[in-house]
Image (cartoon, rainbow, N blue to C red; front, side):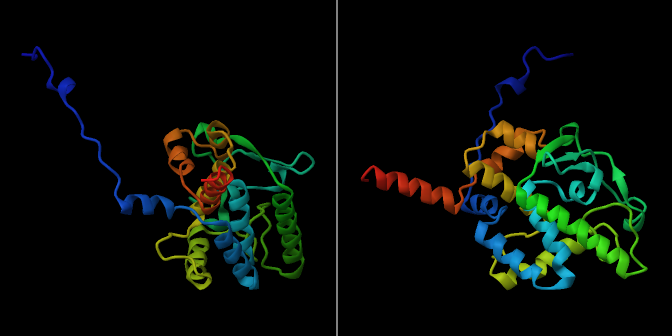
Length: 238
């Protein structure tokens, strides 16, 4: 009883045009450079939010997922060659106090990321502060992680996001932007895109398996790109 001609091959799916809301929603997935700087300045003002500031800036500088960053240990960093080896993500199935490095999200998540001097300095600062905390308090539990609270526990993503959510409006970031750990990853991709880094190189750096995800962020138009377009037009006498 199979039909001779399948109606599926004659079906046509109409293209859905993006609305202004859709475009704004895409643009709200990243922060401008001045927004990041204002946010980090605010978080660095207070001792209790300084660990959040360190991690936030590191995500901004590397495009890493927060689970990858909080799973990092000193042995994952090649300080001489300025490379971090991503080999897994944080496993909190037994709770943060017993957290371990678990499996990576996808096969493309296993990668090396080259670090800027600023990123290297952040890592060294965190390691130095962890040593101080270890000596100054008996409650510090050293399990080798780099981005930790003052007790040595890896920074919890929910606590991290709550701190960001509270700080964002205080530095003038629009409520339309959902400021969580992931926005720094999107921001990093946008920075690479506006500096004409090839799409394939961006995908490799951030560990994206699906190019559609990177492509969406890659097409973001930031303030810098708008100024570059205007400068080009001005130089042509237009």
